[in-house]
Length: 393
Image (tube, rainbow, N blue to C red; front, side, top):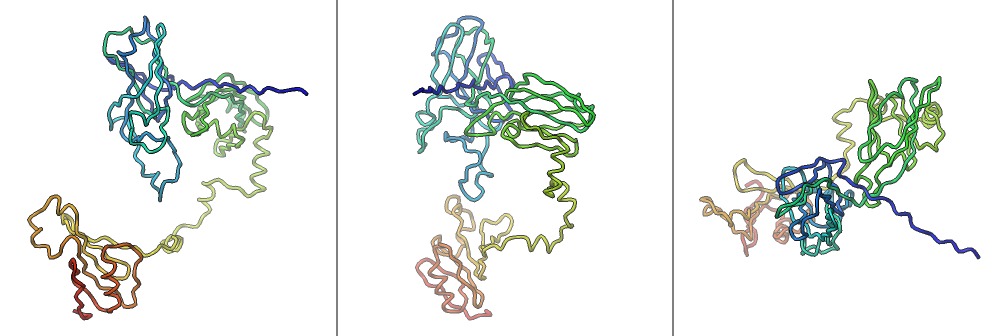
């Protein structure tokens, strides 16, 4: 029997430094990017012997990150991901990383401890070994040689891709290819009567946890028309068709032509988003109104500008007085004139046949009594049942 030994292929890690801006100061050297990078290692190469390990530290720009693993599209609530705080260049502060430094000759290499050990000790989940950063720097507390090279290694890895960009116009292949977060290895143009094609071999970044981390983009910049595409989409087998420019991007192993792909789209009746919008009837108020899904009844907040008091109108017609907590924390001159205590407070008037909303309001029992009585209540003070007022008063 022949035994087959499977040897894992080690992919080169991505160095994000060439795609960022270097920032040199008197006592630090750093990098900055327009998007967050998941840095796992920082390497500083000096023009002379590297300084002592205890005279250097790594800092990253921080404000919103909580130390948890980044989950770009995780479902954490009703749309809360879309409202999640994000770091930017201007709001935040430099945070010292819990880093381990190794000095060898002219090079100092920094790696990170799990984020929950020192930086985020209250983190309930396991920490991560990377630091998500828009900016990162090495700070020196003493004299040091000039930093000849600064590298920021991420948890992405380089992969190779062979792609073909086809055009339906013969002269269109004079376009230049610009690669961001990657490198163009070679390109070859073939012309034909029905158009032309660019065969491109390039290196792109791949991250198994986040396909948008260090994402490689190719910009096809022509004399008149310019468009961009993500390499990972084409590499996974997607056919990227740019109808307005007569361009089709595929893997080089895909032999399809533009004419064949157009015929497939016609047979399927497929249309672009622009075509579908143009063919769609003009929207009307009733059309938009009827397209909205039915929503459960919900309360509505009422109040006057500048006033600290708020009222809540329930779907069944009850009007509730909300006692603001800031009135106790920062009392004003009007506190003495308020006729209810913090634990009570309801001006209510349920509609005839109104239904009771299923919420957990602290005065739920009082509202039930009011509904059963069929009348109106003016005030519900702490420890006192609502006073019934005949309808119309």
